[in-house]
Each structure stands twice: as C-alpha cells, then as structure tokens.
Image (cartoon, rainbow, N blue to C red; front, side, top):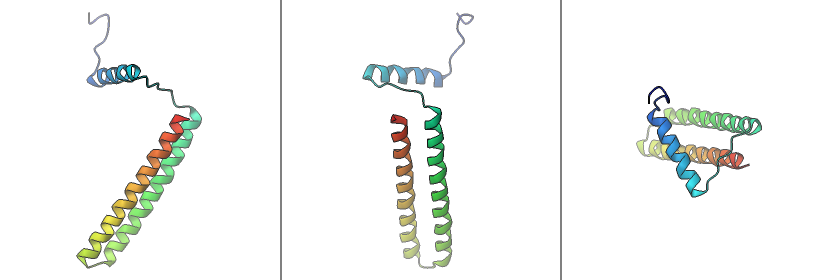
Length: 99
C-alpha cells in the first residue's frame, strides 16, 4: 500500500477535509489570478506601511509621556487604529478575491 500512494501529512489531510466540507456546503474556490495577486500585494504593502508609520508615531508619543493614565489612553488608541487598519486591509483583500 505504501508503494501505491505516499503518506500524507496531517496538513494535507486537514486541507482535504476542508475542501470536502466546502464542496458539501456549496462553496466554490476559484484560483487567484495574477492581477488579483498584484492588487493584493499592493494593498498589503500599503497597509504594512501605514501600520509601521502608526507604530513609529506611537513609540514617539510614549517616550514623551510620563503619566501612566495618558500612556494607557495612547496605547488603547494605538490598538484601535491598528485593528482598524488590519480590518480594512482584510476586507479589501477579500473583496478582490471575490472578484
């Protein structure tokens, strides 16, 4: 039996189960086109730059603050902004994948 088919990894087995579940649910997967890959890469690059800029500004603000309450407020604001950028990025990528 081992000569007929090579053993599959747990990852490959899990992916087969997911594909079967998707097929049973009527979800159809389409391969991503080259144009879509390019657009997704541009979106990721843009949002990585935005998040990096946000990080630099946040670190600069923290260095100037001594009040713990103010630092906590800036941290929460930073987390909200970072989550917003991440959410925007993922929704735009998903929109591109859908076509």
